[in-house]
Image (cartoon, rainbow, N blue to C red; front, side, top):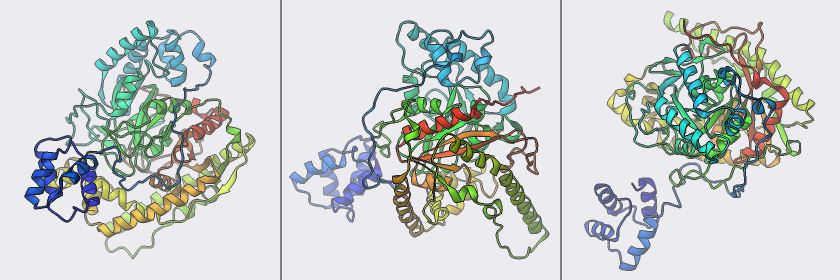
Length: 604
């Protein structure tokens, strides 16, 4: 169907916005299920609306009204003067390591935690079949799902058929590339034909969408094998879904964080070779940190979201969650680029070169974010004296949470400090840099309003009560309160956001990569501006790590503790993923934290 927003915008540009004509013409197109406006429709609508349109203008209007190529700019326009590479070049991957060139192990589960790069070499050289890998990962998904609760739907029949096809193609010399034959998992907001797409939400448990998302199609074409639709917190919030709470493989008393809860948990647990998640405001970053994965949030406008659940049209991004940086690069190579449907996607090329000289890159670090003391980050709100015992109890609970977060942040500073020291040891000249000052938190109003609009019917019909979690910070309450956001405030937030985009882009004029703590203001800033981020595991907390006061896995703040992963974030220029990932890979190879894996116990 035609895009209504673009259609109305075009009519407005023709000076027809103040007439009946646009509404009448749109109604005609809708009634006829038209994919294009015809000259006859224009003549009929003009007669009904009593708008005289001369013959030569009708032809001119047809071209504009049916031109989808120009797209609708939404809130996120391409910044003036922005340049990026548009020509695609051959993929340059790393040389296969010894583990990838050796014979297959007797016990195939010894490969469960191998990188996609290592697995690809074993499959390419026919030392391991795609079918054997697929059966191994499906078996592990079944074995550990009762404990970790990361599977919504196993796509076993589809996967076995794809794996057999991959083996036949590779045997015949038709090798599709590094993902050919590798089993992967999709966050269950990606439509998959023939299987339910539940969005993790009560009321949507049986939802069927009769198409494949663009990302699913592209991975199919690359020969990857979809083994499971993986969990997400209901409508992409947190890790609580209609089937329970997805768990952290390092500590099953904790949730895996969210909203890409299942992809991160399953990847960390060695139950898929890689996965695809999404982020609007931390949904790749947070679970990758909690579960010790390597997660990539690409630039806004690099990966098409066609067939994915919409939460915020101007902020949603799709990206890979993997075991290594190069694995993320291999997946991004396949899924990026315009599909002609998601018109936010820019014609930017991602050209991975594993041998890019990262030593020549200009690197900054967010000095004040690394030096900020936890008590500055956890500033308690000024409150009036409590009116009731219940209010006093809530305040005491909030105080306990703030103190637990402060103590954990203080403990975790050592990992951030060690990361900066390691980078300097690698010969990196770290230059201090700060992000521009803007009211970033106020701009989140746009996300709130857009998400409420996306699920307006859910709120209006009262079906929001079917969602599993109904706390004050959950979507049902957020959607209801968002209806009271004035249009003026949304517009003001959009104006401020555009200025912030320009200002942050100028910061990156001087840097290829900026190193940052994963938590903190940069997460909000870069999600608003659309800049890419790669989140890396950065070591495990020691036995002396402070524990959270609650063991409730549905408590989103229940994090940290002995033996759990920490993370570090690298930020890049818009559409500068090739340099960003090359640098992040160098750090990952120098530290080896990605080689640590959780010790799993199946449900008894």
